[in-house]
Image (tube, rainbow, N blue to C red; front, side, top):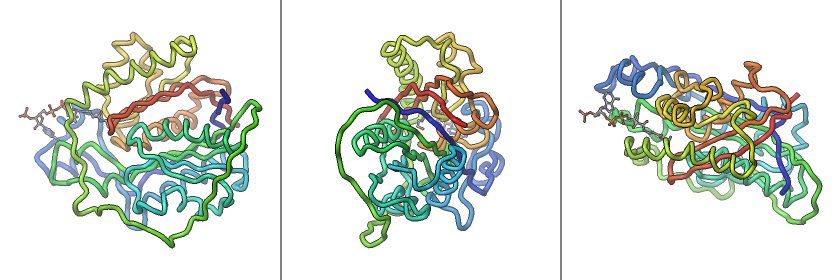
Amino acid sequence: MRKISIVGTGMAVAGKRVTNDDLSKLVDTNDEWITTRTGIKERRFCDEGESTYTLAETAAREAIARSGISIGDIDAIVCATVSAEYVTPSLSCIVQRQLGLKEDIPVLDVNAACSGFIYGLEVIRGLLDGSDGKYGLVIGCEQLSRLMDMTDRSTCVLFGDGAGAAVVKLSEEKSYASVLGARGGYEIRVEGAGPVVTKIKMDGSEVFKFATAAIPKCIGALQAKTGISLDEVSQIICHQANARILDHCVKKLKADPDKFYKNMDRYGNTSAASVPMALDELVKLGRIHNGDKLMLVGFGGGLTWAGVLIEYDGK
Ligand code: UT7
Protein backbone atom coordinates (compact mmCIF):
# COMPACT_ATOMS: atom_id res chain seq x y z
CA MET A 1 0.00 0.00 0.00
CA ARG A 2 1.51 3.35 -1.04
CA LYS A 3 1.79 5.91 1.75
CA ILE A 4 1.33 9.63 2.02
CA SER A 5 3.15 12.01 4.34
CA ILE A 6 2.35 15.59 5.28
CA VAL A 7 4.78 18.11 3.79
CA GLY A 8 3.11 21.43 4.61
CA THR A 9 0.19 22.83 6.59
CA GLY A 10 -1.83 26.04 6.74
CA MET A 11 -4.96 27.46 8.29
CA ALA A 12 -7.41 30.34 8.18
CA VAL A 13 -9.19 31.85 11.15
CA ALA A 14 -12.49 33.61 10.49
CA GLY A 15 -12.57 37.32 11.30
CA LYS A 16 -15.36 37.71 13.84
CA ARG A 17 -14.51 36.71 17.43
CA VAL A 18 -17.59 35.60 19.39
CA THR A 19 -17.13 35.07 23.12
CA ASN A 20 -19.31 33.06 25.50
CA ASP A 21 -20.46 36.37 26.99
CA ASP A 22 -21.57 37.52 23.52
CA LEU A 23 -23.74 34.39 23.22
CA SER A 24 -25.19 34.86 26.69
CA LYS A 25 -26.83 38.01 25.27
CA LEU A 26 -28.63 35.88 22.65
CA VAL A 27 -29.69 32.76 24.58
CA ASP A 28 -30.06 31.64 28.20
CA THR A 29 -26.46 30.53 28.76
CA ASN A 30 -23.33 31.70 30.51
CA ASP A 31 -19.55 31.50 30.28
CA GLU A 32 -19.34 29.13 33.27
CA TRP A 33 -21.69 26.50 31.71
CA ILE A 34 -20.03 26.60 28.31
CA THR A 35 -16.49 26.52 29.69
CA THR A 36 -17.02 23.69 32.16
CA ARG A 37 -19.15 21.55 29.80
CA THR A 38 -17.11 22.04 26.62
CA GLY A 39 -13.82 23.86 27.22
CA ILE A 40 -14.90 26.47 24.66
CA LYS A 41 -14.25 30.12 25.55
CA GLU A 42 -14.79 31.72 22.17
CA ARG A 43 -15.22 30.84 18.51
CA ARG A 44 -14.80 32.62 15.18
CA PHE A 45 -17.57 33.38 12.68
CA CYS A 46 -17.05 34.57 9.14
CA ASP A 47 -17.07 38.33 8.79
CA GLU A 48 -18.41 40.28 5.85
CA GLY A 49 -16.68 39.09 2.67
CA GLU A 50 -15.58 35.78 4.19
CA SER A 51 -16.99 32.38 3.30
CA THR A 52 -15.90 28.77 2.99
CA TYR A 53 -14.00 29.46 -0.20
CA THR A 54 -12.07 32.48 1.14
CA LEU A 55 -11.07 30.48 4.24
CA ALA A 56 -10.22 27.40 2.19
CA GLU A 57 -8.17 29.44 -0.26
CA THR A 58 -6.17 31.16 2.50
CA ALA A 59 -5.43 27.85 4.27
CA ALA A 60 -4.51 26.18 0.98
CA ARG A 61 -2.15 28.96 -0.13
CA GLU A 62 -0.34 28.81 3.19
CA ALA A 63 -0.03 25.02 3.10
CA ILE A 64 1.37 25.12 -0.45
CA ALA A 65 3.83 27.91 0.43
CA ARG A 66 5.01 26.10 3.55
CA SER A 67 5.49 22.84 1.66
CA GLY A 68 7.97 24.50 -0.71
CA ILE A 69 6.20 23.34 -3.87
CA SER A 70 4.47 25.45 -6.49
CA ILE A 71 0.74 25.62 -7.23
CA GLY A 72 1.27 23.73 -10.50
CA ASP A 73 2.65 20.75 -8.58
CA ILE A 74 -0.72 19.90 -7.02
CA ASP A 75 -2.12 16.73 -8.60
CA ALA A 76 -5.42 16.35 -6.69
CA ILE A 77 -7.64 18.36 -4.34
CA VAL A 78 -10.08 17.11 -1.76
CA CYS A 79 -12.09 19.46 0.46
CA ALA A 80 -13.91 18.08 3.46
CA THR A 81 -16.92 20.22 4.32
CA VAL A 82 -20.60 20.12 5.23
CA SER A 83 -21.19 23.85 4.93
CA ALA A 84 -20.08 24.99 1.49
CA GLU A 85 -22.17 27.64 -0.26
CA TYR A 86 -22.85 25.47 -3.27
CA VAL A 87 -23.79 21.85 -3.69
CA THR A 88 -22.12 22.20 -7.06
CA PRO A 89 -19.55 23.44 -7.96
CA SER A 90 -17.82 21.72 -5.10
CA LEU A 91 -15.70 23.78 -2.73
CA SER A 92 -12.68 22.01 -4.20
CA CYS A 93 -13.56 23.21 -7.70
CA ILE A 94 -13.92 26.77 -6.44
CA VAL A 95 -10.52 26.53 -4.73
CA GLN A 96 -9.07 25.05 -7.93
CA ARG A 97 -10.29 28.10 -9.82
CA GLN A 98 -9.22 30.66 -7.17
CA LEU A 99 -5.73 29.19 -6.96
CA GLY A 100 -5.37 28.61 -10.70
CA LEU A 101 -4.60 24.93 -10.27
CA LYS A 102 -4.18 22.77 -13.36
CA GLU A 103 -7.26 21.14 -14.91
CA ASP A 104 -6.41 17.52 -15.58
CA ILE A 105 -6.54 16.48 -11.96
CA PRO A 106 -9.22 14.95 -9.71
CA VAL A 107 -11.08 17.62 -7.72
CA LEU A 108 -13.89 16.75 -5.32
CA ASP A 109 -15.44 17.31 -1.91
CA VAL A 110 -16.10 14.70 0.72
CA ASN A 111 -18.82 14.85 3.32
CA ALA A 112 -17.90 12.83 6.37
CA ALA A 113 -18.75 15.66 8.79
CA CYS A 114 -16.17 16.03 11.57
CA SER A 115 -14.22 13.00 10.30
CA GLY A 116 -14.01 14.61 6.86
CA PHE A 117 -10.38 15.71 6.85
CA ILE A 118 -9.17 12.21 7.65
CA TYR A 119 -11.51 10.63 5.11
CA GLY A 120 -10.07 13.24 2.73
CA LEU A 121 -6.52 12.05 3.38
CA GLU A 122 -7.53 8.51 2.56
CA VAL A 123 -9.40 9.63 -0.58
CA ILE A 124 -6.46 11.69 -1.82
CA ARG A 125 -4.07 8.82 -1.22
CA GLY A 126 -6.19 6.72 -3.56
CA LEU A 127 -6.56 9.54 -6.10
CA LEU A 128 -2.82 10.24 -6.22
CA ASP A 129 -2.07 6.59 -6.61
CA GLY A 130 -4.75 6.23 -9.28
CA SER A 131 -3.68 9.27 -11.31
CA ASP A 132 0.06 8.83 -10.82
CA GLY A 133 0.20 12.15 -9.00
CA LYS A 134 2.73 13.21 -6.40
CA TYR A 135 1.31 16.04 -4.33
CA GLY A 136 -2.25 16.40 -3.07
CA LEU A 137 -4.06 19.19 -1.28
CA VAL A 138 -6.53 18.27 1.47
CA ILE A 139 -8.60 21.01 3.08
CA GLY A 140 -11.02 20.85 5.99
CA CYS A 141 -13.20 23.93 5.87
CA GLU A 142 -16.44 25.00 7.52
CA GLN A 143 -18.70 27.99 7.85
CA LEU A 144 -20.97 26.37 10.40
CA SER A 145 -22.34 29.78 11.41
CA ARG A 146 -24.43 29.53 8.22
CA LEU A 147 -26.13 26.42 9.56
CA MET A 148 -26.60 27.35 13.19
CA ASP A 149 -29.86 28.05 14.98
CA MET A 150 -28.89 31.04 17.11
CA THR A 151 -31.98 30.53 19.28
CA ASP A 152 -30.95 26.97 20.31
CA ARG A 153 -28.58 27.16 23.29
CA SER A 154 -27.77 23.46 23.10
CA THR A 155 -26.00 23.88 19.75
CA CYS A 156 -25.29 27.56 19.07
CA VAL A 157 -22.56 27.73 21.71
CA LEU A 158 -20.61 24.83 20.25
CA PHE A 159 -19.63 25.54 16.68
CA GLY A 160 -17.38 27.90 14.76
CA ASP A 161 -15.93 28.67 11.34
CA GLY A 162 -12.41 28.00 10.08
CA ALA A 163 -10.20 26.09 7.70
CA GLY A 164 -7.07 23.98 7.83
CA ALA A 165 -5.11 22.49 4.94
CA ALA A 166 -2.29 20.07 4.32
CA VAL A 167 -0.18 19.25 1.30
CA VAL A 168 0.56 15.54 1.19
CA LYS A 169 3.13 13.66 -0.85
CA LEU A 170 2.73 10.15 -2.20
CA SER A 171 5.71 7.95 -1.59
CA GLU A 172 6.76 4.51 -2.92
CA GLU A 173 6.57 3.52 -6.55
CA LYS A 174 3.64 1.58 -8.01
CA SER A 175 2.03 1.85 -11.45
CA TYR A 176 -1.71 2.21 -12.10
CA ALA A 177 -3.75 4.28 -14.55
CA SER A 178 -6.83 6.47 -14.26
CA VAL A 179 -8.16 9.73 -15.72
CA LEU A 180 -10.11 12.41 -13.91
CA GLY A 181 -10.44 16.16 -14.42
CA ALA A 182 -12.28 19.38 -13.57
CA ARG A 183 -12.45 22.99 -14.62
CA GLY A 184 -13.67 24.97 -11.66
CA GLY A 185 -16.65 26.64 -13.38
CA TYR A 186 -20.06 27.87 -12.24
CA GLU A 187 -21.94 26.71 -15.33
CA ILE A 188 -24.00 24.14 -13.52
CA ARG A 189 -24.79 24.94 -9.91
CA VAL A 190 -27.20 23.91 -7.24
CA GLU A 191 -27.37 25.93 -4.08
CA GLY A 192 -27.78 24.17 -0.78
CA ALA A 193 -31.10 23.93 0.99
CA GLY A 194 -30.39 27.42 2.32
CA PRO A 195 -29.37 29.03 5.58
CA VAL A 196 -32.95 29.88 6.55
CA VAL A 197 -34.17 26.30 6.88
CA THR A 198 -30.93 24.33 7.21
CA LYS A 199 -30.04 24.17 10.88
CA ILE A 200 -27.73 21.95 12.91
CA LYS A 201 -29.50 19.77 15.41
CA MET A 202 -27.68 17.38 17.72
CA ASP A 203 -28.46 14.89 20.45
CA GLY A 204 -25.43 15.97 22.50
CA SER A 205 -25.32 13.31 25.19
CA GLU A 206 -25.69 10.42 22.69
CA VAL A 207 -22.93 11.89 20.53
CA PHE A 208 -20.79 12.35 23.64
CA LYS A 209 -21.06 8.63 24.44
CA PHE A 210 -20.29 7.76 20.82
CA ALA A 211 -17.26 10.07 20.74
CA THR A 212 -15.67 8.76 23.93
CA ALA A 213 -15.85 5.24 22.49
CA ALA A 214 -14.81 6.20 18.93
CA ILE A 215 -11.46 7.78 19.83
CA PRO A 216 -10.00 4.78 21.72
CA LYS A 217 -11.47 2.49 19.06
CA CYS A 218 -9.63 4.36 16.27
CA ILE A 219 -6.38 4.54 18.23
CA GLY A 220 -6.59 0.84 19.14
CA ALA A 221 -7.23 -0.13 15.52
CA LEU A 222 -4.26 1.93 14.29
CA GLN A 223 -2.03 0.33 16.92
CA ALA A 224 -3.24 -3.15 16.00
CA LYS A 225 -2.57 -2.52 12.28
CA THR A 226 0.90 -1.04 12.76
CA GLY A 227 2.21 -2.40 16.05
CA ILE A 228 3.13 1.16 17.00
CA SER A 229 2.75 2.18 20.64
CA LEU A 230 1.51 5.57 21.76
CA ASP A 231 5.03 6.29 23.05
CA GLU A 232 6.24 6.24 19.45
CA VAL A 233 3.58 8.74 18.33
CA SER A 234 4.42 12.39 18.92
CA GLN A 235 0.84 13.79 18.81
CA ILE A 236 -2.67 12.36 18.73
CA ILE A 237 -4.64 15.12 17.08
CA CYS A 238 -8.35 14.62 17.71
CA HIS A 239 -11.43 16.42 16.50
CA GLN A 240 -11.97 19.39 18.81
CA ALA A 241 -15.60 18.91 19.83
CA ASN A 242 -15.32 19.06 23.58
CA ALA A 243 -12.40 19.16 26.05
CA ARG A 244 -14.19 16.67 28.32
CA ILE A 245 -14.26 14.08 25.52
CA LEU A 246 -10.48 14.31 25.15
CA ASP A 247 -9.88 14.29 28.93
CA HIS A 248 -12.06 11.20 29.22
CA CYS A 249 -10.04 9.41 26.50
CA VAL A 250 -6.67 10.40 27.96
CA LYS A 251 -7.78 8.87 31.25
CA LYS A 252 -9.18 5.73 29.62
CA LEU A 253 -6.00 5.19 27.58
CA LYS A 254 -3.70 6.22 30.45
CA ALA A 255 -2.06 8.45 27.84
CA ASP A 256 0.13 11.54 28.13
CA PRO A 257 -2.26 14.54 28.09
CA ASP A 258 0.41 16.67 26.36
CA LYS A 259 -0.05 14.46 23.28
CA PHE A 260 -3.75 15.40 23.04
CA TYR A 261 -3.64 19.01 21.87
CA LYS A 262 -6.67 21.21 22.49
CA ASN A 263 -7.63 24.46 20.83
CA MET A 264 -11.43 24.38 21.11
CA ASP A 265 -11.13 27.13 23.73
CA ARG A 266 -10.41 29.58 20.87
CA TYR A 267 -12.27 28.12 17.88
CA GLY A 268 -15.10 25.95 19.19
CA ASN A 269 -16.05 22.89 17.16
CA THR A 270 -15.17 23.59 13.52
CA SER A 271 -16.15 20.11 12.26
CA ALA A 272 -13.92 19.03 9.35
CA ALA A 273 -11.58 21.99 9.93
CA SER A 274 -10.67 21.19 13.51
CA VAL A 275 -8.05 18.47 12.96
CA PRO A 276 -6.03 20.33 10.28
CA MET A 277 -6.24 23.58 12.27
CA ALA A 278 -4.84 21.82 15.36
CA LEU A 279 -2.19 20.15 13.18
CA ASP A 280 -1.10 23.49 11.75
CA GLU A 281 -0.94 25.15 15.16
CA LEU A 282 1.23 22.33 16.50
CA VAL A 283 3.61 22.66 13.53
CA LYS A 284 3.84 26.42 14.08
CA LEU A 285 4.44 25.93 17.80
CA GLY A 286 7.42 23.71 16.94
CA ARG A 287 5.80 20.70 18.61
CA ILE A 288 5.90 18.59 15.43
CA HIS A 289 9.21 17.76 13.78
CA ASN A 290 10.32 15.99 10.61
CA GLY A 291 9.89 12.25 10.86
CA ASP A 292 7.32 12.50 13.66
CA LYS A 293 4.55 9.94 13.61
CA LEU A 294 1.12 11.49 14.15
CA MET A 295 -2.26 9.99 14.78
CA LEU A 296 -5.22 12.03 13.50
CA VAL A 297 -8.62 11.01 14.82
CA GLY A 298 -12.05 12.28 13.81
CA PHE A 299 -15.61 11.46 14.84
CA GLY A 300 -18.95 13.07 14.16
CA GLY A 301 -22.04 13.30 11.97
CA GLY A 302 -22.97 10.20 10.15
CA LEU A 303 -22.03 8.88 12.67
CA THR A 304 -18.56 8.60 11.20
CA TRP A 305 -15.17 7.91 12.68
CA ALA A 306 -11.73 7.90 11.13
CA GLY A 307 -8.13 7.59 12.17
CA VAL A 308 -4.85 7.74 10.36
CA LEU A 309 -1.23 7.21 11.33
CA ILE A 310 0.84 9.53 9.19
CA GLU A 311 4.35 10.95 9.13
CA TYR A 312 5.26 14.62 9.08
CA ASP A 313 7.86 15.39 6.44
CA GLY A 314 7.81 19.20 6.38
CA LYS A 315 10.45 21.77 5.57
O1 UT7 B 1 -18.65 17.46 16.28
C1 UT7 B 1 -19.40 16.29 16.26
C2 UT7 B 1 -19.25 15.55 17.52
N1 UT7 B 1 -19.96 16.26 18.57
C3 UT7 B 1 -19.69 16.00 19.82
O2 UT7 B 1 -18.83 15.21 20.10
C4 UT7 B 1 -20.54 16.64 20.90
C5 UT7 B 1 -20.77 15.67 22.03
N2 UT7 B 1 -21.61 16.19 23.06
C6 UT7 B 1 -21.22 17.15 23.95
O3 UT7 B 1 -20.15 17.69 23.81
C7 UT7 B 1 -22.12 17.47 25.09
O4 UT7 B 1 -23.16 16.53 25.15
C8 UT7 B 1 -22.74 18.91 25.04
C9 UT7 B 1 -21.66 19.95 25.31
C10 UT7 B 1 -23.37 19.15 23.70
C11 UT7 B 1 -23.81 19.07 26.12
O5 UT7 B 1 -23.25 18.79 27.39
P1 UT7 B 1 -24.01 17.81 28.41
O6 UT7 B 1 -23.23 17.76 29.64
O7 UT7 B 1 -24.26 16.52 27.68
O8 UT7 B 1 -25.36 18.60 28.68
P2 UT7 B 1 -26.86 18.15 28.41
O9 UT7 B 1 -27.17 18.21 26.95
O10 UT7 B 1 -27.10 16.85 29.12
O11 UT7 B 1 -27.65 19.28 29.16
C12 UT7 B 1 -27.53 19.47 30.57
C13 UT7 B 1 -28.35 20.67 30.96
C14 UT7 B 1 -29.76 20.65 30.40
O12 UT7 B 1 -30.62 21.23 31.38
P3 UT7 B 1 -31.55 20.30 32.31
O13 UT7 B 1 -32.41 19.55 31.33
O14 UT7 B 1 -30.59 19.40 33.04
O15 UT7 B 1 -32.25 21.28 33.17
C15 UT7 B 1 -29.69 21.58 29.23
O16 UT7 B 1 -30.92 22.21 28.92
O17 UT7 B 1 -27.74 21.85 30.45
C16 UT7 B 1 -28.71 22.60 29.72
N3 UT7 B 1 -28.03 23.31 28.65
C17 UT7 B 1 -27.48 24.51 28.81
N4 UT7 B 1 -27.42 25.35 29.87
C18 UT7 B 1 -26.76 26.51 29.71
C19 UT7 B 1 -27.82 22.88 27.38
N5 UT7 B 1 -27.12 23.82 26.71
C20 UT7 B 1 -26.90 24.83 27.57
C21 UT7 B 1 -26.24 26.07 27.47
N6 UT7 B 1 -26.19 26.87 28.54
N7 UT7 B 1 -25.65 26.49 26.34
